Length: 140
View 1: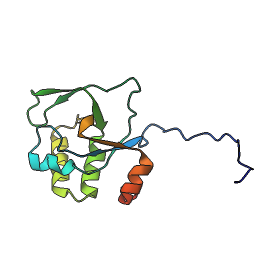
View 2: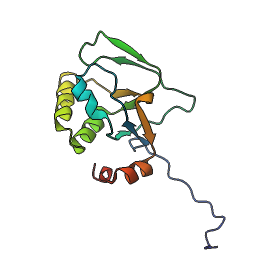
View 3: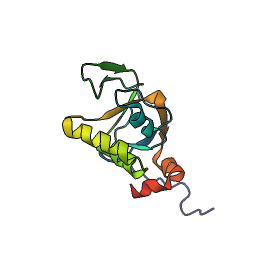
């Protein structure tokens, strides 16, 4: 054991705004209004999340259908992902058709702030674990 560092306090790096705080990897087809074959492409694709989860508990959202904006879906515990980050991840993992579908949607709806997934539709991965499981994320 190297005694020179024993007992020394070293500050942990704190995430800066815009850093990836964790990754969300959908494990089931997300709920939503997009065509089923488009939604199925999310499964297994790690999505970068740049906003920390609240420590108080679940984060609630009101989701709007991507096809029919009049349809509102309450989301009791959601994970918000930047839409352009999500589209880049889809393309990076070879889902070019789905990425194109979402790009077209964002061109029609430029005010879209985030894609919200239900927490129970996937798993949260710390950044290091995500890179171990998906080394190709280093190139994203």
